[in-house]
Amino acid sequence: MGKLFSAVYDVVMAPLEKAGIERIRRNLLRDIEGYVLEIGFGTGANFPFYQKASYVEAIEPNPDMIERSAEKVRRATVPIQTYTAKAEKLPFPDQSFDAITGTLVFCTIPDPVKALQEMKRVSRPGATFHFFEHVKLEHEKAGKVQDVLTPAWKVVCDGCHLNRPTIQLFEEAGLQVNNVKRFGKGMFVVFEGNVHGE
Image 1 (cartoon, one colour):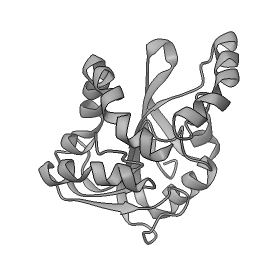
Image 2 (tube, helix red, strand yellow):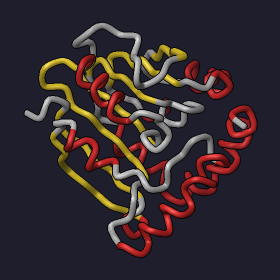
Image 3 (cartoon, one colour):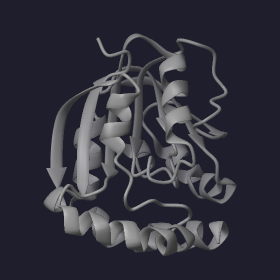
């Protein structure tokens, strides 16, 4: 299923990108500076939008996705190095990064709590995070529908959880969440903040 998912991902996402996701990515990433870690880069959809970063190190557990990102790495305006790795076990020393980014990724991480611990470990003092995710809806009935759909959705969409309360997980891990912007009646959210809760 992982190989099929990676093969169709860009085609399926193309109309959504043009409908607004591409603009969200650009606005989220273009002003980030310093050494950046991107978690779960997929096929590299974010790579064109880094403009001020000194260097981007990007991880992705799916080798088929990594293969499809190669051309975007070559075309990027900042240096990008990709790694086959999981968010729960980052292959970097403590205090390596000034910023951590991700888009539509925390829904697929098997152990998001461990991933957040790893984010804190590899972040320098004062490091920031910048994410665009889909989350569990606050509306009770809609949230229950997401709960019902999630088991089948995970099978079809490479482990994606429709009902993950991502912002809540960040806050429970001690990360300071700021600048929350919601889209699509609350299903999609952009949020930024400080890794160490400063």
